[in-house]
Length: 118
Image 1: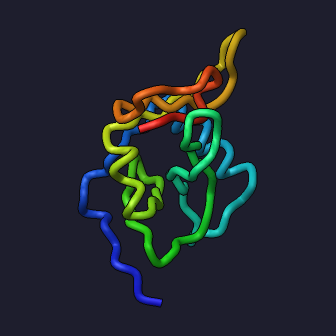
Image 2: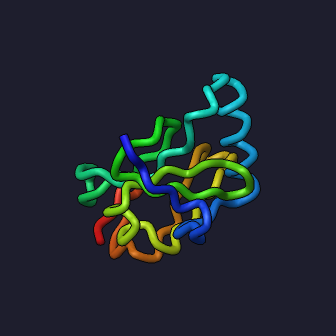
């Protein structure tokens, strides 16, 4: 399988310091092999039309590869249009605990913030 890498290209999204700390903690806790990276994407579904995908995975043929603060990011090429400029954050408060997605491309988001329409 031949996969073109995009490590030199600027990542289309950003990850806050608190989110990066949590991602690194999770990655170290589950002891992932070196060929895994953070998959960021979208899938159909959710109460607003699209749901976010966030998890550790292996590289797939349709992926672009980016690097943010030393963490490999895998994103299917076709998902960039929905995620360009998005910020992934980590919230650890009384009302919310988990990753949040601040997406400038979202026309509407659901109450829980895990789905959106574009």
